[in-house]
Image 1 (cartoon, rainbow, N blue to C red):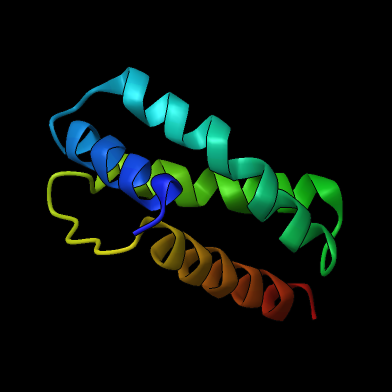
Image 2: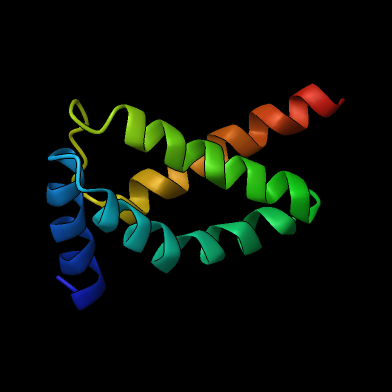
Length: 90
């Protein structure tokens, strides 16, 4: 397990307990990567909105989440919302 994955797992444990500081740190350390992924497919404003929506959803459902890999969960969530956004734009 990489240091980043271990840190993310520790953040997720704290987030499940409702720790807002851990959530903010997790957002700051991961959002930029996923914003740049989205920008390749949609504009920067839409990319930021998609990533923010994913993190809001994560926070709202924090108590019920069973996430084994935060990066994989986040990537799948962002990818799903990106596809949905692109379909709505057509």
